[in-house]
Length: 389
Length: 152
View 1 (cartoon, rainbow over the protein chains, first blue to last red):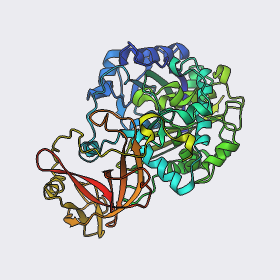
View 2: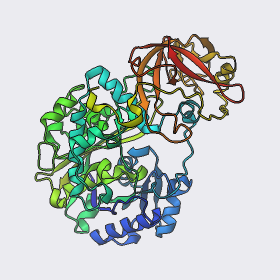
View 3: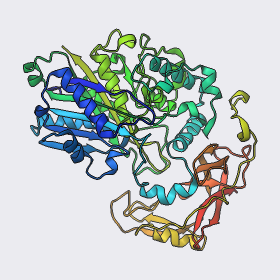
View 4: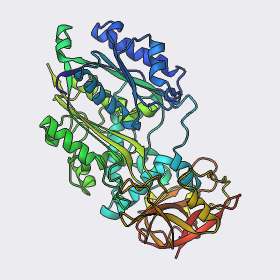
């Protein structure tokens, strides 16, 4: 994996109910990547998309995108592991280049879930065994997880509030964040926000938006030939789908991030102490804490104590969700993982602006994808990135 | 939960609604879920049993999740159990909107599987993890039933 370079990142403004179609957002991302690198469009010969609630409702999402953007490709696919797709696309892009299937890969994460009709049909088991119960999808699932965590370990909601406040502070510093969310909040605002799926509150939840982001990949050798000296590499990657698949009495406070992180740390030779910024997939505030535990920033069941004693601001002990994360920058539909991933790359490129992490040579990004039956999430991914040059 | 964390407004009370009046539609089963839905017509809980693993599984699958073999048996079970976790829905979408607050639980059956179900005839004060519950069948328009749970 170390022979491949991320040579550029791009991101659109995140908006609620925007007026641009998903492919126009894709065009903006591609144009930015070309301008930033000086690469010609004709050099792109690989396209990998994340799932999309809108464009991907069409069974020909990746091909239609190639068509709209005028790309002639040796490798073209959609990665459909839910919110883990942006990370999955990165790993598959690296693999495709290193397998010699293509040379220059455009990773595009675009969705317009807030402005277009969601054209995904409900998942089959949901139709028969979840819909008749009235579970409101992810907030309901995270209600179960939170209640169980509270039962097992105790849950100090003020610790979760601290994460929410920190993320919001960072979104205020992020010009790409959804404007509606760029307003500071307090611990009390979080505590008093109305219950949705008790104990999940409104300020635990992401807001669905429109937006897109992307990365450009090529071999390190090619990047050097092109004079692209500032690069980021995928130092470690772990992915686990359907963790504990055959264990029906599983513990939903545990996730596949534990095994994904173990693999990623082993590949990279790094440990949690070596991570300079942490950008976990955040559909709900508590997901951040569960991942801190699974990845090993703290011990299982001790997340609240760890949060209470750690400064997560961009200039703190463990810079966390430095762009606001999805909860405070906005969830760009199923492309939302790109919000976390691209912020990590931005920090490694030293382009964090007012929120730049001072020492920024490594970053850890995660993905969460899908919700199982009464479980937590279906796919867990862990990406460890390192800056080179 | 401390007093300051109690939700505001209508949901403040301890009464929880039953979801009997929600408009639900008959379920069109998949090829491998039909025996379950047929069982509900007689208010029987019929679930899959894998003879290889000697374990039950729920919801119905096209194969044993344990062995990958399709020699599954359908067995009627009592379906009694306890609450493994629960959430109180205080704000949701149609057709459940307006029926809040209501409770949904993951019920852990004595047979070793978990089932997601609405809890009925229960108050918020009664609700706790570990509460023993028993099946409650709520009719759908075409003779099928939805499995709910109520305190035992």
